Image 1: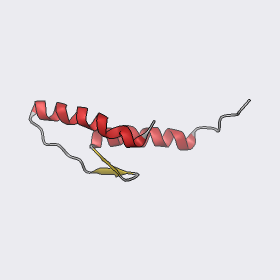
Image 2 (image 1 turned 90 degrees about the vertical axis):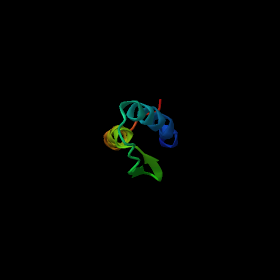
Image 3 (image 1 turned 90 degrees about the horizontal axis):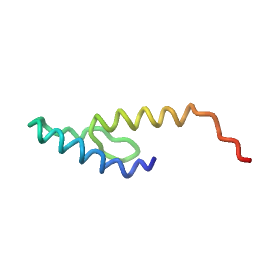
Image 4 (image 1 turned 30 degrees about the horizontal axis):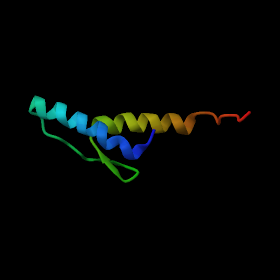
Length: 59
């Protein structure tokens, strides 16, 4: 996963929020990337999995 591409996902979240008339909140910053809280939750979970995943063995 390329964390710098998360802005595309946030745009989709923003479109949903706009359609519901809800305010957009771009408050989360992870590795210098500003994203909405929904995307931030997904990215944090993904990064946590990467940290705890065993190293792949090259054959």
